[in-house]
Image (cartoon, rainbow, N blue to C red):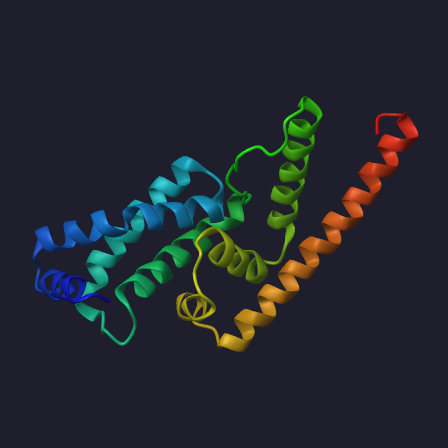
Length: 186
């Protein structure tokens, strides 16, 4: 935590709304992005971001600087997301299309749609670590802090989650290739 951020946290803990507003501005995009990538729904992500900051404001008096403010805030966002997950299907955000031909564009969209669906089917523990690592660019240590897990568990979840996605993707690509060959499309 930077010195400036630490000062803002201390001021906000004392009830300084302007200091808290500066913290919100500094972190709102990251909190929203985390929520959007976990939930896959823009409006839900906005609601989660707002609820996260409301909970953070209320919880600030009990915040101890044993962890970074960002880690504490992400943990709040994670918990709010988890409360909403049972009624939502998680999706990955859209990425830029790869490929130049219409067939390449279609295949890239089809592949992304499959990955969206398969990520949503992964157990929550794998989906969360994959989202935090690859979509939020958090380090293993930061993920461990956010999820309150041992570092070894984070590495195991990442490994197993990647393996599960890779196996499902390989099977899907083999099946898709086989279908295209049978229909004369590929």
